Length: 209
DNA sequence: ATCCCGAGGG
DNA sequence: CCCTCTGGAT
Image 1 (tube, rainbow, N blue to C red):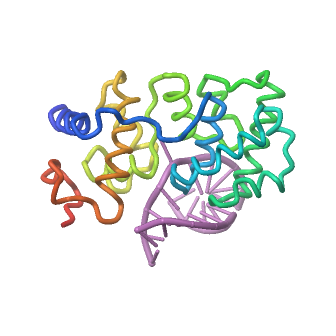
Image 2: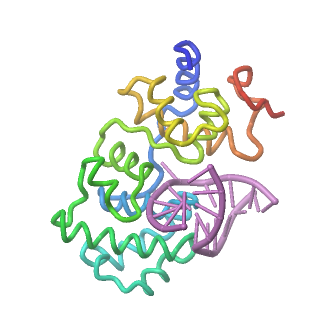
């Protein structure tokens, strides 16, 4: 993506969503990590509905590490993929207790080595939790990046991350990430995107109606 | 039927 | 690369 188009996109996003931010409720980095792990294939809204009860039942990392798998599953059942998520949450908490004094590590390598924590979750924890420049590519970011031409249609998420990061200056990654999300979630939706109001329609690769 | 702030395994 | 895991909203 060239500089002029990138600037157009970022200026538009800044106009639409000057206050774009993480919408997963959390009070500390550990709660953020748990919330992001829960957010796979579901909406932030659903995650925010279950995290208060979850953190009330398991206030400390050690509580989650020692949780009964069945009870943990019940606690998170209403969001999808609950068996994997419960297993990963418990194993992740156990590793924090065993190897990190119960603290969430702040390096990419350590984060990504945790059970159930992949590239995307790592990027969110780094950027939102530790304010380290990182650009997480989720379903929204991937779709927006491809529609606007930052990446090609059959690029992998790794390709998308690399290309967007190359187009946008590092100091803007964290903010831009959330603006991509907001634009994808509330405007350029997967179904029924608001094309007729969109100022970027001329540069869109999909050009729906 | 498609999508939602994915990760791990094959 | 592909598939599976999952339930709820639209």
